[in-house]
Image 1: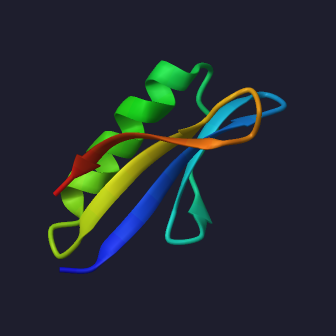
Image 2: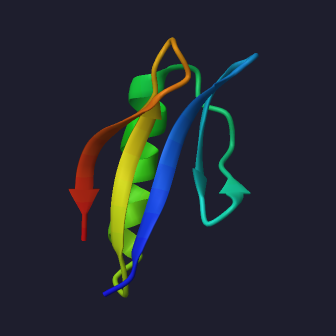
Length: 67
């Protein structure tokens, strides 16, 4: 089963997630963006999704696997 990354990133006006190169709408906080990313990942039934969030140093931290 292929594995894809879904990254939650800060934006100047809030937070977004990027899945397969496509950005989401902007969410007001990271918690809402993570929940939306989690929901989006669950709909991708043909792949395993690794949910990551960018920390203050720019590193991508793994949050969970969603399949």
